Length: 278
Image 1: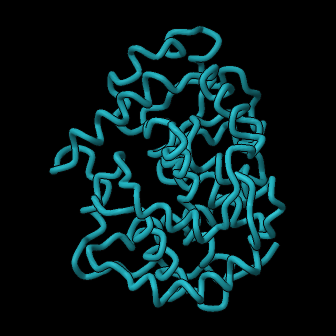
Image 2 (image 1 turned 120 degrees about the horizontal axis):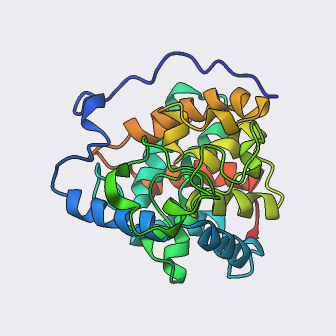
């Protein structure tokens, strides 16, 4: 395992306090956000997840270079995000630069900050945003209360009342490991599959960040620990450290992408070179 000092919490920017992030009760974007999650919680069933996993696992939809994929996010505004209403490409560079400031010697960590959301390109291939963006959660077992908008948004999800799926463990064994758990389908799992399929050399800590950065019920609320293996628990601090940068670097001060691109292209050439299959 590569060891770095993950250090103290990231310093917050002066224009926005930590409590001002992830407001799911009110705000100018709340209707859009709620509707996205309502559709997600209605349609993300175990059967749906298996179908999408099979459809995308072969990485046979298109071929693109990683930087081109990052820049394609110029055309995407995340409908599940209550914090920002600007294209996702800016968020990619904001996250990467936040990590670069705190961890200048860990280039793979910086690269993960840049690419962590590029799985959202599924939205350009016809997938609705509720199957691409937003917080993730396991399917095939009980939907925990820490899931955003848990309330009554699952009432029309058939898995909610399926006795095989709505118990604490559902179809899983205790401490089976998150790699054996079916997560709601979205950009996290898709990008993880792409990186593995293309033999990208990002270390395992980075792959965990990619795969589980939207799994807020786990890394921020401590749920689903009964499904975790020892490896998952070792990796959890890395995902939590990444989350600070993913969340708290979102500001209205947008980075100069043209100035930053050459540096991040060098990281892509090191860890995810060439034309990748998606």
